[in-house]
Image: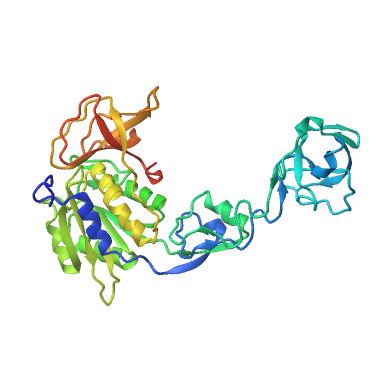
Length: 419
């Protein structure tokens, strides 16, 4: 424990390290058509089976020439045309030029392409005076200029993005080898939670956590299994855990992990697995549970994460603690947490030393190009509007106190799956 650690609270880095040590990535792989591969993690590196481009081609609409033909004259007659997909295949006489389009194959012997804006055509005679002098191989994209045959294109463990799909298609690869997406079953606990569309009675609230968890799971590339809301009943809770364990690699709950709330949950998890109830040195989101539901003759082993019940706390603990776990499980070896960036506080941030505080903020660039950040206002763990209008977390260090206007703070811009 470091000098700034609060007794009884586990540092965030320690919690993440403990979880990752116990995670074995999924090993099931399958072949998937490229059009369905978005968001999957590559189980096999992709190397290029070909050169891209596969032939020398023109970077401009213009004229293919031999530089030697323009040493004694500035005008050349037109000998033919080369279009994308329809290359020039005839004989190319000395002292002539070929009309060529962007992407079209370079005729044999061509050592420069002159853009059409630097040429003047008069019938079949083209004047190149304004284009001289020429540079060797100007406006020519050589074979393999983008990707060479045999080159590593995407490594194993890379999660496919919208930018990767057309890249792979360029290589003529119709399908890719990927890991199976982790299956994650989740449910909320609490007698006070009611589904959307029902009328609330005294003391009841709508369950919002499942909707946020489901959205983040799907954007993160997991198969989400929503088991609904489970009341505070031991028999129903145990059945819910067993149903989840039967279907999923990971079981996530929200609620029932705070002091005084976890009696049923703790009893059941002690029966079904090896679970630790942790107090994490973060705010919001101090209560957190992690462990494993052990395999039986009827149920497979599963990882368990218990999130707090307050909406902001549930989303933050998922974002900070659960995402690294899911990334390792999915084989997503390139995943990294968002970096901390310095920004100038334009509002006061209230804080007491003892826990790392993830406050919701709004960043922007000032006229000098410097990052500035302001608070979204209410930082209560139950105030979700402040999360919805934020575009970053203001990460206030564990030992830090109140932040005044003009002080420098660290911010973490939200990851894409948080939008």
